Amino acid sequence: MALDPTLTSKDIEEEIRSLQLDPAEDNDGVAALEDVISEEIENLDKMEEGTLLCGWLVSDFKDVVQSNSQSLQVEPKVKDKVVTDVEDLTEEDKKRHLNVVFIGHVDAGKSTIGGQILFLSGQVDDRTIQKYEKEAKDKSRESWYMAYIMDTNEEERVKGITVEVGRAHFETETTRFTILDAPGHKSYVPNMISGASQADIGVLVISARKGEFETGYEKGGQTREHVQLAKTLGVSKLLVVVNKMDDPTVNWSKERYDEIESKMIPFLKSSGYNVKKDVGFLPISGLVGSNLKTRVEKSVCAWWNGSCLFEALDAIEVPPRDPKGPFRMPIIDKFKDMGTVVMGKIESGSIREGDSLLVMPNKAHVKVLAVYCDENKVKHAAPGENVRVKLSGIDDEDILSGFVLSSIVKPIAAVLEFVAQLQILELLDNAIFTAGYKAVLHIHAVVEECEIVELLQQIDPKTKKPSKKKVLFVKNGAVVVCRIQVNNQICIENFLDFPQLGRFTLRTEGKTVAVGKVTGLPSPGSSSSSTNFA
Image 1 (cartoon, rainbow, N blue to C red):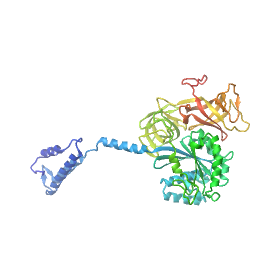
Image 2: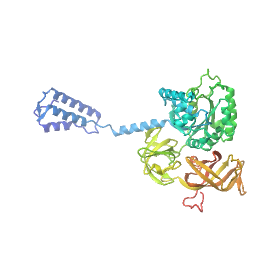
Image 3: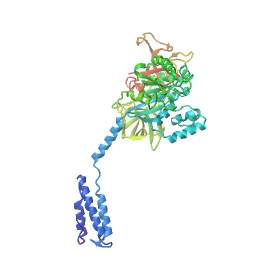
Image 4: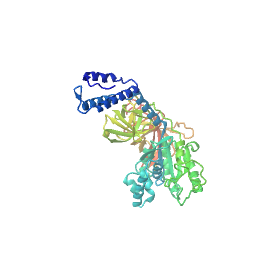
């Protein structure tokens, strides 16, 4: 079809309009239309510059035809967009997710192993490693360079010890992992408790170097306390990695490995672990990366026939989670970033953009503006995910660690008093556990001073039945049901309903004295003077 110079402008407009397609028509029609329009533009090109067509210059008329052609670009069908989103979500959800906490005595090599894992899984490039090597060499600490990947602040790098819980992400073919690098020094046990309370599984790092294992394992060493705390805090599966096997004092010795294993097994059993089902042992070297991503070579360690660390982590089953339960997310940290952002691990339920939730215990109604998982913005997140959530309706100054993001329909309880079953581990010298005993309570992200108000009954450890005698005080090893009071409202749940929000530790003067679980909460509406427990 060629343009006739005698046509009026109205005729040409109708001609073009008649060619416009309904957006619902096939894309083939659009392609045909584009061919016709390009043909007309070619015809216009052949006309002499300055020729009048329907009272317009040819150059101006060509612009009109081209603009019409651009306006005819048909949007892809909405249906196709939806399919793409679903595919993206399915791809993302194919991989299961696990939170792994690295625990153990100070200097066992937890941060070095964490750094090496990130390097081997491609999360850190060679250039960054070279920078850290130079930095460590300048500090005369050549072997610390891998730990710098996890230990990011200057205090940690100068002292060579982890203070805060380091957080990072890596993936294998089947699993997305969140690494939680807990501090090993006894001064930072509260931070270790915070890290372990967010974990699904634990990696207990033990140094095989002569003298170092003994220091961590002996009375007062952090190996013992970390194992007991991990079990109390819900870390049900444990991988015991015997590190520094490449050290000259060890040299991948099977005798040294067997000695450590034989000493750890009875202790793990006494801490409540089923060693056959829930515990695995393997030798590694964090500094050189042996037996981490790939199995150690026979030329290095001829006697080891088991799996490497990545394989062992992949083999661990994901604990059961309830995506349809009432939403619960203890807040471990908060900050301001174009709004209020809170961080935590989802313990129950799921979260989406646009959800309306409560921040407890201050009962503030908030709206979810965005959800971030592994640094990526996502539309929704399921239980077990460590997430950052951007909220509207609350200022970051009104949020404290230990507050809980909760569903509105079934909010979490906020209490000043509760009933619990406690196991006394080791009281300080000459201390008596009785009414009036004061300690620091650690439950999920809450750290709060508490007082034992009343001992209700003692439980016989053998029969698991309560004794009929009135109990006034108890000693080490006793199991007792008691009433506990706190100074400020805290958000907790019955252990049977939400284990992660109902298990706790009591510490005093830097020592864990008891572990326990919440067995009774005040009935809604009961006053503090006459509390009835459900």
